[in-house]
Length: 116
Image 1 (tube, one colour):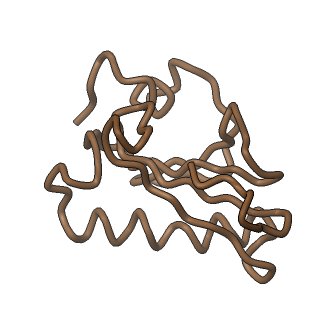
Image 2 (image 1 turned 90 degrees about the vertical axis):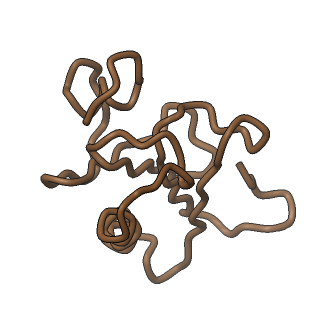
């Protein structure tokens, strides 16, 4: 399921280019265009869901979050540490309404590090 006016659906479809980090038949991971850390990768399911409260099937949600470790390994941050963030709806600053997981790392985080 895709949504015609969704930026991430267009990236998944290949209509908009991205810097791919990982892709399989269910998810796409790509570099954030406005990185908040040296590593800032977004992971999106290829099926469209607006946000984490959009009735995502358990197997789809599990697959999305199990991809986080793969991306951390590929980006070289699995052992040093990383932050995983999911923003939900406007008050939480979800800028694209297609569920996506932020994976951030590559430098020590402190109280001033981005919370996104």
